[in-house]
Image (cartoon, rainbow, N blue to C red; front, side, top):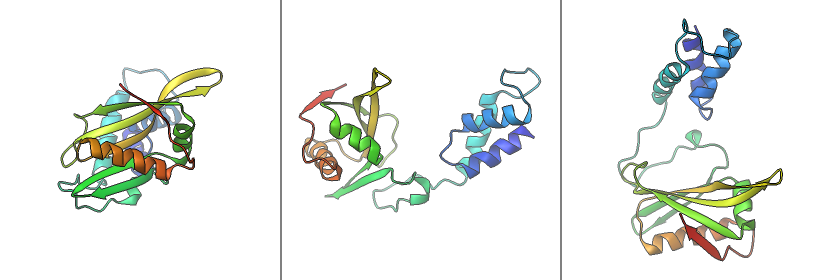
Length: 177
């Protein structure tokens, strides 16, 4: 029963993690917050929910000529798409995240290559220190899926960010992680 309800929740709430959906269903239906040996493992139910949810996801693009379905991207999360000379770079960040980046003195950037599939070549993330409750923590604030990794591509991404930003100035310092 819990597995069926979790799958249903996973399909209805596509932006909620399957683990969170599983934990909510297990605690609501079973009333347990601790593992029980007679019940399936939370991770197993979450994996089943993800497999069930994957049937509703669009197929991964194989070329850069594809339509990005907005139903599968959280509202106001796609900030910009850059098409130039056969390349495509997609910038994902909320307005609040862009505002935090605008106010940051230093950006910390990181490029990850193994988590993306062709036709993209890297996930480029931009981090900054964010202060909350008196504590500072480095937080990823923008994500860029890039189809090429040349210097001019990074310049295009930073220029697109500056155009999307509400500020008239952009950060002057960038640190590669």
